[in-house]
Length: 121
Length: 109
Image (cartoon, rainbow over all chains, first blue to last red; front, side, top):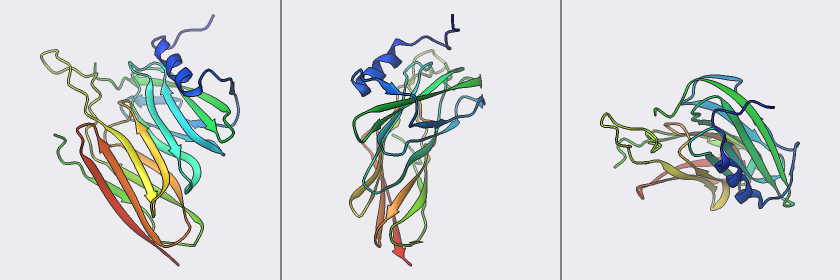
C-alpha cells in the first residue's frame, strides 16, 4: 500500500490521457529536475530535458488543477530543455511527459516536499 | 487590467553561426491563479499569461502553454540555435487579450 499524495487526483490522469492518447510511456528519455524539499510552494524551480522531444508536458498531480505548462520545441530550439518556476499546493509528485519525434512518450516524476503551500487558499 | 507588466529578456548580442545560446526571460505579472479568495471569501478571478512564444527570424524556438500553476512573474530559461544574424522575438499572451512583446537583435561574430 502506498501513501496517497496530497490529494489523489483523477484530473491528472485525464490530462495525461489527453496528451498521450493512452499510449504507453517509457521510463527513460526525459529528465525532470526538481528540489526534494521546497520551503515555499509559491515558487519552486524545475527544469525538464528530453533529447529529441517535440513537446514536454509538466503536471502537478496534487494541485487543484494539475496542469502546469506544455513546452513545444520549434526547429530552432537549441537543447530540448527548459526551466521555469511553478506553484505547488502541497507535498506531491511533479510529473513530466515528453512526446518524442517518433510519436512515443516518456515519463518522469519527482516527489517534492512542500513546507508552505502555494495556493493561498 | 494587468498593471505594470514589464518583460525582461537576457540574450547575447553576438553568437557564432549555428551556436546554441541560452535565453532567460522574466515578465512581471501577478499570475492570479483563480484559487485565491479575498477577505470576503469570494474567489479572485483568474488572470494569468497563458502562452509564451520565442521566434528567431520567424522560425519557432519554443512555444509554452502556461497554466495557473506557473509562479508569479513567470520565468523561462531555454536555448536557441542562431543560424544567421537576425532578431529574437518574444511574445507573451495575457488572459485579458493583451500581448506583450520584446525583441533582441543577435549579430554573427
